Length: 237
Image 1 (cartoon, rainbow, N blue to C red):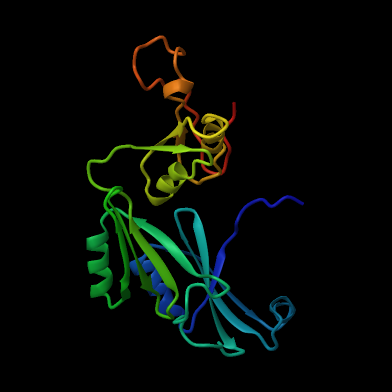
Image 2: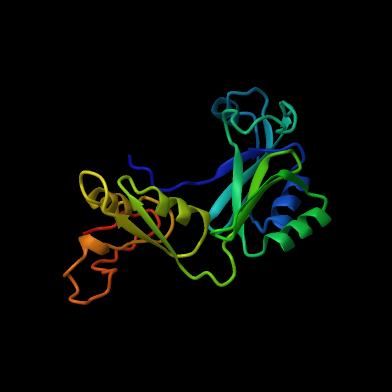
């Protein structure tokens, strides 16, 4: 049977009300529904005994998370203070329009901000930093792009990873320019860009030597095709 959609992501918490306040008041999620289960069939499904579980489903931007609190058996472990390369859920990620004001609000609310994790990309005008939920689960907060930048043009040859990488860092439209290099003279770069499976809008333009004579103009850059990759879909043609 084919998979229809992603339903939700579960996060075990030590205090359900406290965590719900964090995700709703600070990260903008909205409550959708609640759940309370005890005993079977949850014991079998979860591989535990004498289950007493309360959960709340929160949604934002079409993404649903489930906060789970176990009254029985008791929650195990401590806060997520280990390395991010440990197996399992590593973090959530959110984009904001103004990172400075967002961090100021989170700091005023007592949210743990990992100042050492902050990075910046001056070329894209982007920045990112990790914050922690009440149990230490990481949330990556990143701003979208620098004021005034409307589009990013990224040239790349052969496997052409740069356009997709740029598009993953911001919400701006990205034009991927395949560079005529390697044994296929840029055809491989063109195919790599237009077949992207990325969850962002990405356009591919054939320019320079690959596009000469196709538009009948004297412009050095000759755009002969633009293929938009919509979220979750591959470009056609």
